[in-house]
Image 1 (cartoon, rainbow, N blue to C red):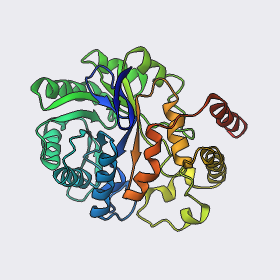
Image 2: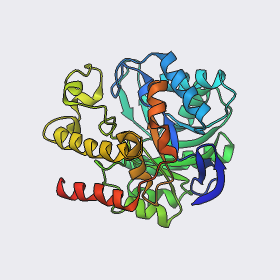
Image 3: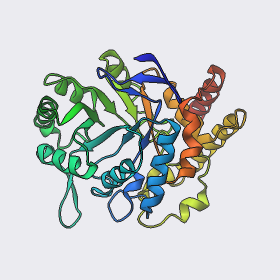
Image 4: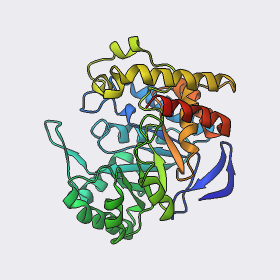
Length: 325
């Protein structure tokens, strides 16, 4: 659902059944968790992260999405530091359900949500979390228990709204029997289109907002990725072992990024901006999560808040996707 409210980054969009009015892109805080954990992007300087957040907020981005597990708590702490040193008051979203032990080993559990929310409130240094999301519906047999806990947190006022991330249609149906779902956070890019068939239509039919993650497929569609760069990625960058970063998919994905760069050059924007705009073209998508590890990276993606593909350009991309499955 789209309202007519305007911001310096264009029209704001209502997230599901909430009163949250979002800019078309939000700041994604996965990579700023730093290295030394299972799903890291490699070493990250905290000041670069804070500068990136400040640049996004100064430009008008009004929401930040993080998770407890990013950097094993460190991303939330960095977000808090950034917010302490700015006058902007963005919505803060975070996620639960991935817990770790003293050996930094991560497991999925939905049995500790009441404890997790207290830890996230402390790290984020906020009194209430605007949107609290179950990160992964794992184990599956704990979905009802987890969603019941989420609903209780909303009733208690610790979180304003509750959302799901990576849920299937069946899991959303089960959760809806307990309490409404404000939003779903799925992966969605032109490289990963698995949610198009059932999940996005279900969200649209049930007025569940969608904030998609990885619209640039972890950097593959930015236009800055090359085969040589992939080969030189540090060992603590999870992308080294991701299938989309290895042959033969890598060559196809880089060719796709090349097409996006050609389209973007007609408008003075990057391939990454075109990739983000492609996801926003889907009417089920409320807004897209866009990561940034430096102020310069943020500058490169900010035009995605207002840039939109024409129908011929969208068809041009669709033709490539059909011809290169």
